[in-house]
Image (cartoon, rainbow, N blue to C red; front, side):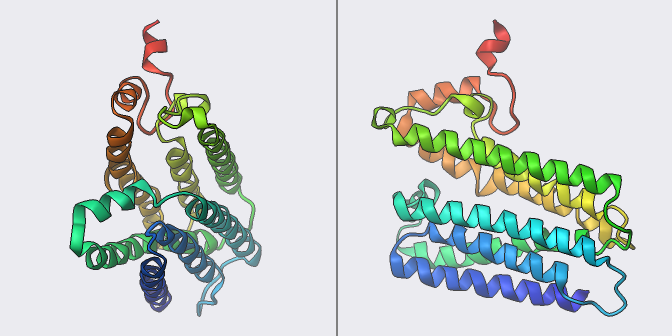
Length: 267
């Protein structure tokens, strides 16, 4: 299994290097998120299906896990591809480009290698979910499936609500605060994280200490989204472009977990 994991690490590193070359050619760093999504999906599916000597994984479980990982990668990758093709450069990367100045490309390269390293525990979590020797399905498998369905549905709804809001020219300087966006400033991030919570549930029963490593996926995803490359740079960009309106939105709306708006709670 170790050699397989090392192979997945190399795949992710090369894929993000190719993504760096591509974004440089098209002058739009938003493309690297598309590369990350598809590369993580390919690594995850490879890990789920690749034969391992002495492995007692159940083919039905491997097929279900690989299918779900494929659906996740296709949904996210195609969504990001459509966004990057029809909108200006993502606000996070535009901010990096401005802040890093002449060193933007070199710093972005190493930033993407860190993203490749961060994707490895996510791919390994899916690998472990596929390697449980117990027959499929178990009650925990059904719980994991429910989590994934809710996550995919929630992400799709949040994306659709935001797209509808942005399509209205009258909202050019406004903040989307209706639907799921009234309960969380980043519902798409929350449901993305919720989907990663399913893989440790799938992985319950994996032999040895490896099974516990699946918990790294949701923990790492939460840290990245909430504290590193998700919410912080995006909110800085939103404050710069929306000013007081976004600051008021921050005051009444949860940053990540969906909660009732604070003004409604006080009422």
